[in-house]
Length: 115
Image 1 (tube, one colour):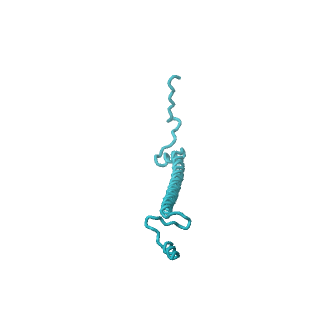
Image 2 (cartoon, helix red, strand yellow):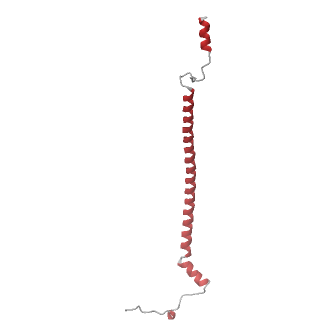
Image 3 (cartoon, rainbow, N blue to C red):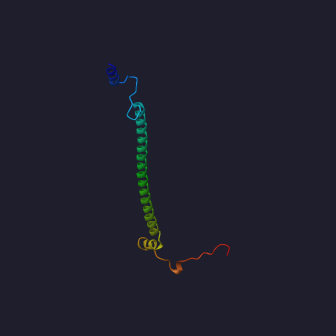
């Protein structure tokens, strides 16, 4: 009979108020809290890496846009230099405006004041 009482006590389910323990001795609520904290840390880590990747793509696109603007600036400077060249202006004046250099008798030299 003593044996049957022991076997009944060992087979009894744990009471509702008692927390079940794992094989290592950690209680389930502690394990759940640890798992939730670990999950939030992992989500923060992954979120920060996603944000970092987005920023890297944004920086790459801005650098690409900067390179395009620099190339456009170089082209515009070259075009500006070509448009203001004296040879080009002279050819336009001769061909479209039909102007020419003045003859010596058409030039009037003005004296500078004070001399």
